[in-house]
Length: 569
Image (tube, rainbow, N blue to C red; front, side, top):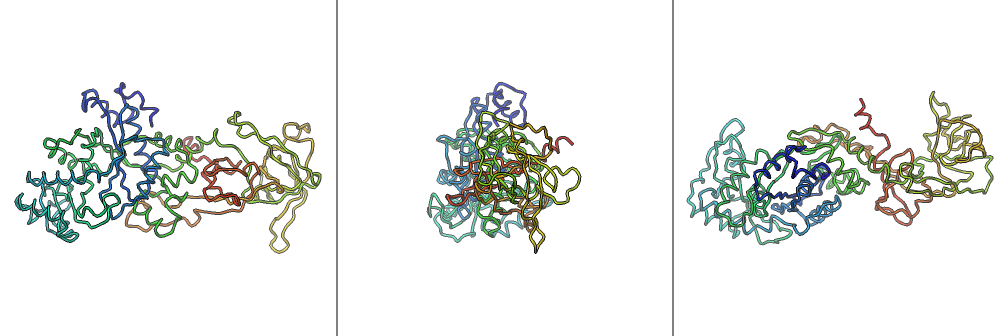
């Protein structure tokens, strides 16, 4: 996202509201004229495309203002966290091209300090230990239209609360028996300010601190304090935290004059999260897809996770371009997934070599082509990038073409192969369909007998013939067998339905189709993650399942650019 941000430090007319806020802060010399952001993921799952937007925004803004950006894991809920997620998140951020340098932090780094700051709040009569059950707390909290009421334990003395909180830490009470709550205002119109929970008792093994702690801070408590300790100037988060901002500010204001560790007075700024059509962003639902076996792991190419997009063949540049295009807004909206697909097409157009692959093969015998003859034909690697050079394509008497490139009774304007029709084979000759061979039992077309005109060789054509159709092909004798995986949207419903937490997800039964296909021999040494354009079929990536005995390709995206069509209408 740095392209349109690089001059922002000296340009008060910014392109989005977050930059406007930062520019104003810099004009007023707040935070010693520094910009320091952070990306704070919770390690309870893999990052998805929505997180990519946040990564690009936080790291991009830091870069453009010559500032810093931390990576800090919000590891305050060990019951759902795992080292696997920590490692995958770091890999994703690096893959997108960003670096936190030596600024890798964890909320657990501050567990002792967070505890001591909670003690300070108790001493200041701003926090108390509550014995109400979770259900009772919900009942006492009230509703959006009715105020809450004070807990019967709210007026305990500071001394009693300190003693109870120490016993909570010592493990003298069972899980859920007590909580530490902030003492704010049970009649506040903002429910988040009605004495929110700061600590709960939870006996769960932590991936970093082991069994040292049996009480853990809530995110709303740990987050602002961690920001202040690390010197964060602008705490950028998604819109669902807007109602939590008063609590964020209350905690900072309650402690900032008494805590020497605070390096800044951070400002929370909210922006709209990313919603994509035909895509689910709920972590809970993504976890369900993995745990219930609907997909083959977090990096399944149908998943909107960064690792899934990476395995499918998306590039960091395409994802960053997408995040740049959708911009930063104050209100939620849904982006058409066609824009993401448009970005990867644009990125690969001049980068990916053009090769020939027949996905659904139909055998063609060129009867007047000499048996045993093999020609090495010159083929360009990418017409959009002449610097990528050329390669040799073997041509012989028996070839494969796509089944869809032949029709026995074609409609008007069908410019492919049909009985009596002529077409050009890409980089080769013009052929004519002379005979159709069918399966005697099913009537299915299984083979075509054709003739070729030797005067129509590509680059040397002296025939003067003009044909409208050009087909891709591979030589049967030389082609490599490959497994090709065609991916479609995992969901066929609208975004609002998918994201509804109360509704069951309806999966697309045709989200994956596996084909036995044939590709040109130049791909024999293809490496995992290498990307190609299969002529007329789309962009494809070598999957990690490939080995010396079998090549496996994932379709990244088809060649049809719906987004361009949408923009023109």
